[in-house]
Amino acid sequence: MTPPVRHRLPLSLRRRAVAWDRQRDTWREARPALIAAALKRAQDRPSGNWYVLGASAAITPGRPFGRTVAHTEVVAWRDATGRLRAGPGACPHLGAPLKDAVVSRGRLICHWHGLAPYEDTARGWSPLPAHDDGVLAWVRLDAAGGEEPLERPVLPPRPAAGSTVAAVHDVTGTCEPADVVANRLDPWHGAWLHPYSFVDLTVEQPDEQPDGAEDALAVQVSFKLAGRVVVPVRAAFSAPGPRTVVMRITDGEGRGSVVETHATPLTADHHGRPRTAVIEAVLATSDRPGFAVARAAAPLLRPLMRAASGRLWRDDLAYAERRWALRESGRFPG
Image: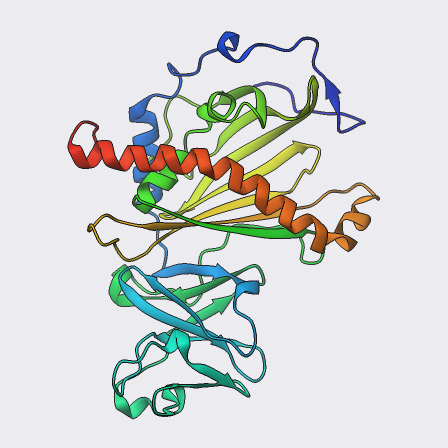
């Protein structure tokens, strides 16, 4: 096991820059069977039928939020107390899209004929369980999930509330949730596919994981800032559920910071191809005294954090979409 990363200063100067084509290859370590086995273990873990709808901040008072999750039309809004509510996205009267409804004093009111479905459940419209964890909004779809329902989503440990700067990036790709999870369970691609962000990447993992064990891929990597200036950290990747992969910085700058990647199945496109929303929550934290300044500047930092996630996911979605296309064509095993 490589010793933990310890630095008084968060920055480090690489002794020499290594050209992209001269870095150590990782394809032998990134064995397809290893990634497939980790994906299978993730898919076997319970979700309790909970799906991420989007960022908590995206569901604002006074406006409904609509999304089709796992082929189920869903509407979400906030009631008069600010509590998250959710239900079927079609009005039970004549099927109007409730994402275009009006929220007045916390009441969801259909704009076609004024029906308030949450207050008139006798018409066949029933609320859906919803959960707001402060960063992400969730909905429980028992018919779509088909599992034993859980009262709350399975949430990974997070830094203490109030000690983070959080940002959520939301992007959609033509693939299935499994392709997104497989991408995240392959950290070996980091320095090859994202050389603008990562260098000097090494993955440590046992040859085999016991049945039912949570995958924990330990990674030594440096975040690239400029030229030879980098921030070395140690991170661990794990999959607590079938549609979630978590990266946690375990040593180095930002220790305790978490990146949660959630894959939410949507409705198929007009060609019948699957679509998946990648909803990634970055919760940055630090024990450095100056981090209080970063928290105060959170409104300015969040767009930058979302932009960084977006750049990575432009490449990673191409990976996930290609994986789905090859599997669909039969040229690559699923």
